[in-house]
Amino acid sequence: MSADASMRAQEETEAGEPQSGHARSDVAARFRHGKRIAIVIRLLVNRSGGAERIYCELANMLAARGYEVTCLHYDAAGGRPFFPIDPRVELINLHPDPPPIRHRLARWASRRFFVPRSLRDKWGWFAANDIFIAQLHDFFTLARPDVVLTFMPPANTPALLAAAGTGVKVVPTNHNVPLEDYTSPERWDPNPIDRKHRLEALDHAARIHVIFSRFGEWFPDHLRSRVVAMPNYVSGEFLSAVPKAVREPCILAVGRIAGVKNYDTLLAAWALIARDHPEWKVVVYGTGPQLKTLKAEAKRLGVEESFLLPGHRGNLGEEYARMSIFCHPAYFEGFGLSVAEALALGMPVVAFSDCAGVNEFVKDGYNGLMVDRAGGAPALAEALKRLIEDEALRRRLGDNGPESVAGFTEERYAQGWVDLIEELTESSTMANGDA
Image (cartoon, rainbow, N blue to C red; front, side, top):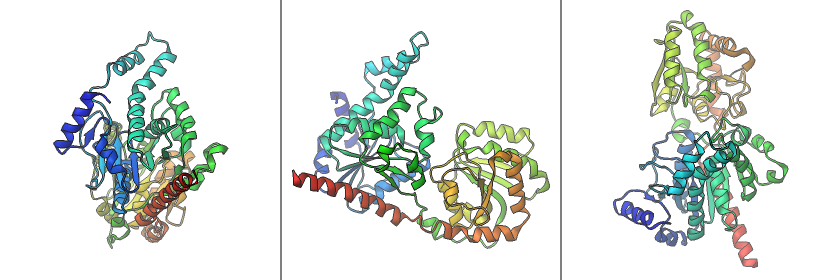
């Protein structure tokens, strides 16, 4: 760690801000009392996605259960997490400010077209990951956490490489479909070197977390024995909320406005039936790169008054409780948290039958309608139309929703992680005792 990074960490700590740069020795000292858990994510500041929410809440759960928890992230910008963090949790930003000159030069070279593509890829990956790996390696060596949990490939890969040879046990968590996360050039860093390292780094994992057992079948044979399945959970506020007796004529969708969520198909479907149901509206809560494009397309189709995109919304429980239908047209999900929350509040769900994650707990004719993706927007429109015009069907499917997600509780999720941590730390203790 450079001297200026160390001074900056001390100054920010004295100012009451999260520590930045390299982990300080007093943090390491505190880690030596009790069981020490580090949780790593790449980007955290002001990010309101589902994975970031689970990250913060898991840190809080473990701290509440007596573990010493440190959250590590790598944000170029300063600031706080969007979601609340228990004051007992240590929060450290490992990003140096400014980055060393060699990394700025590598980033510059990776963007010059006169440089051969293979070198651009190599330097680009180096610029994006080398400091993060070095900072993590130093932290693991100094603080010696008992278990490290990492969130998603952009953190999984650097942490696994950083821990290699240190004896620190790392459990990468995967919050989406592994096939997409580890092989698709459209997910995460498109650099082919990054995709190569994503899978190879898993050889260093103590365990590999997936959301559903079926997702573990994708991994190579030599890794499958390390796979553990642990579904996410529905917050108690949704499991205990009371749906409205009379619901408003609204179709709800919730999620990041991005290509994978496929909201353009929902918009096209709505345009086919909106004129026949003037009292109904579609409300899509979320922000993202396609928000402006989707608004423009709604206007072009003449449905901007009934296809609403109001942006981010807090306290979604009220929306689930008062609206009539939940539509989730995504291509794939890891868990589909918004879908599970909607089911908990008694909303019938319309989704595509091949949407991994969602099709684990939404069953056609039981708690929702599952649509063949080959039918596209017309098939989705037909399913929505069927529910709009049949209140009894909406009520029957919605009534089955809460039971279908009743097992996805916070306590079950937290206990799953406690059991895994205890298993890993007990095996370490036994190994040390044998030695």
